[in-house]
Image (cartoon, rainbow, N blue to C red; front, side, top):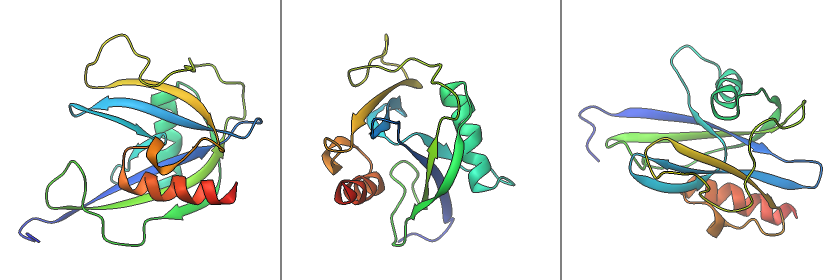
Length: 151
């Protein structure tokens, strides 16, 4: 491992479940890469993890969420997928929408008009259909498996 200029990439994600037991997924085209993941994003310096998730919700959904409880924290070494010489640290919280959803929910993956960096769409998937194969990133696969085992 090159440790000349190591860094940490801290990511915070929400496991958002609706009243039907469906989990919210984000389909994204970012850094020239197509990916399906849990909603969330990068921690900014000086920000707490729950505050990060609330900020990401406003940025991605245009509405707030209520962060309920810690769900999972990455507990093994995982190199960052996008950033060379960075170690990933991913933190997941259970969350929900206190208000009715006011953004577009799609019924199909990658439902955006143009494939350009920053394109984003959302969809619900039942816990029964959620599997590690449904998400793209390595740690999301671990979390999807954990959710799948809970039933």
